[in-house]
Image (cartoon, rainbow, N blue to C red):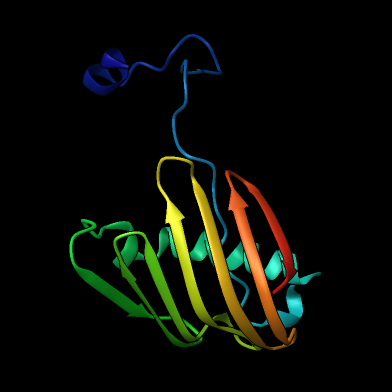
Length: 137
């Protein structure tokens, strides 16, 4: 690498690999419309991923109360390990209103919300690690 940067000398091998992990896996953003989701589970899994990477949450120091507007509609507030959703939609046509908690030690997110739009009704959503389970609430 030094020879390339200093002298412009190309490496003798065509392929170079680096040991270990270079970056985190890519996480795609939520689709614009909820009609793109195959199931209510996929919609909630996407919403939970969006929360993880929401800049206001991702860079929050965990002190006090903070929140943000959800991209398609509504809002989300967070305080400590508690979340409040008001008509929060990450994709048009699917919103949620209710409460949630996140257990940082166990990487466990639990939502008790009422959904409107493509799927309607009360739901309990539990994400442990990468597994998402959705049941009628």
